Length: 324
Image (cartoon, rainbow, N blue to C red; front, top):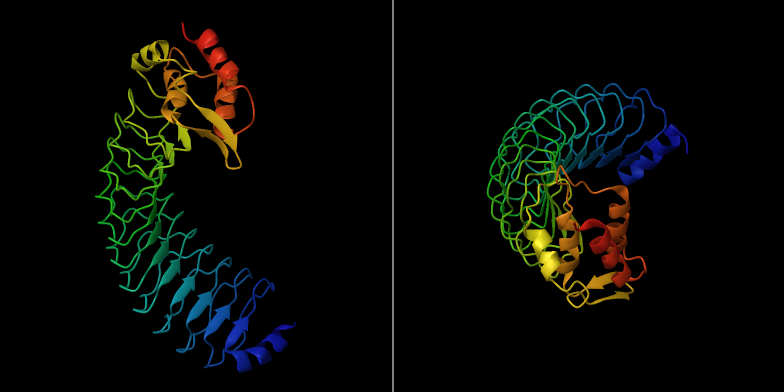
């Protein structure tokens, strides 16, 4: 369908759909449009937008600025451009994707906002977050602090910044990726948390692990011990830590076969006492004098990937070949 035909259709539908058409500019816009999709073109500017507009997709272009935004706009995807600033945001906005630009600051965020993606910019700080916000992705910026978090927040991805601490975590949080920062400690973890990626920080200890957590990445820190792990845990990455001798003594004194009841299900390998198996990994979790080599990682990977094999044989290899 040609541009002209799409314009004719938009007069009847109120939706102008011009994605991926190698456009250098947009045609004159109807005053009744409610949706514009002009993403993945070669646009360097946008015309004045109709006040009726509700949805604007203009990502994947060469825009350096945006025109004033319509007062009833609810969705704005302007990511993947060359924007250095945003215009004032309408009070009706619910979703804002402004990631992969050159932004150094954000305008005040409306109280209606539920999702904010501002990752891969040059932000050094974030403006106050609205209480309505449910998802925040602000990774790969230059953030040194975080504002207070929304009580409604369920997902926070703030990795690859310069954070030294995090604010209190809301009780609704399910996903936290705070890896590759400069964190020395974590705040208390909410019971709702299911995934925690805190690797590549400076953590010396972890707070108590909530019973719902299933994924924990804490490798490349300064941990010497781990808190009790819940039975809900399905994935643990903990190498490159200076584990103390407690774990070696634990394995030597434990019955690694009797202490582990493993069998395969349609969902993969299930371990009734997962911590007994994982302690084998902890023991060799990157002490500077006893690094995990590729063979050991492959053996551990067999546990965690759910591949079939002899559990007794694998544990025997770990004990006989690695525990001095």
